[in-house]
Length: 113
Image (cartoon, one colour):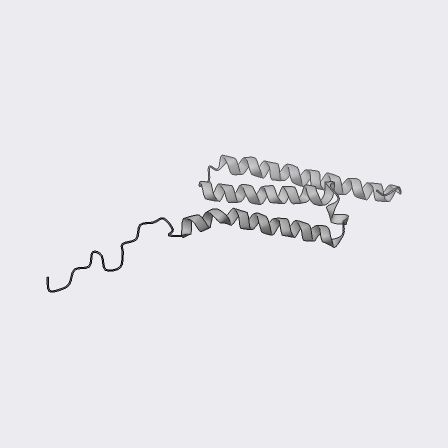
């Protein structure tokens, strides 16, 4: 932390601005809840708000914005794995495994009979 008064004021201003932004995003969260959006869209909006708020907290209050590049690499890797895990249900919806398919040639009648 800075020991000079100007540095302390700059740090305090940054914390107050992030605190105000978190308050604004909390208001946005409550407003989004009042809109009664469709479930998939509501989940998307909620995740976007949560990721934004979490990023601000991690970057400023956990001081990750001052850390080395490998921490950002770890965060990026975490985000990639999160995206992969969140897409797993889509693969179960899009496949046809377990869906009964007629056998080839079954149900087909020759034109002359």
